[in-house]
View 1 (tube, helix red, strand yellow):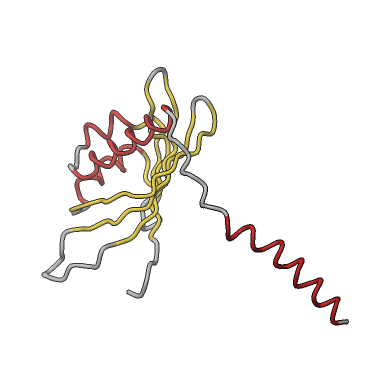
View 2: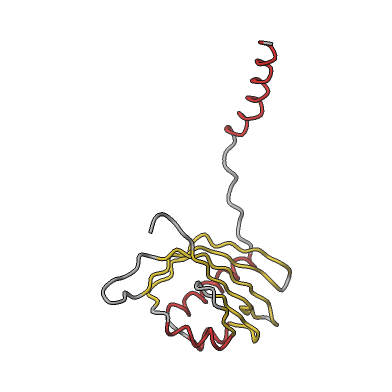
Length: 157
């Protein structure tokens, strides 16, 4: 019985110890397509920051739709019109990832800290959100087809 326990312990250690000895995998290099899409997403973020409706209109596809952090579905013009009413101060994006779906489509996801202007001297704490964008290639240009913001709960509010 004692040898059975000893054999089980030896097998367990043989399976677990090599995992501890391995160095973390190096970060995957970003390819040119991913670089283009990340730069395009950052341009979208800048348009949001500056309430630049004209720039946003040029970036989106004709059938663009947006699901806001409040869960409302907005179609192209309604989403562009809503841009200037946001009271947005800052979007600080991080952990940007690209999932290539095909030659003409990709999904860009990232997390962000979103700060808005204070209301009646009572500003809310920074809002943590997760963003997902679906980009499609039309000719030589990447167009935003779908965008979603999801509130993320980090810590106690």
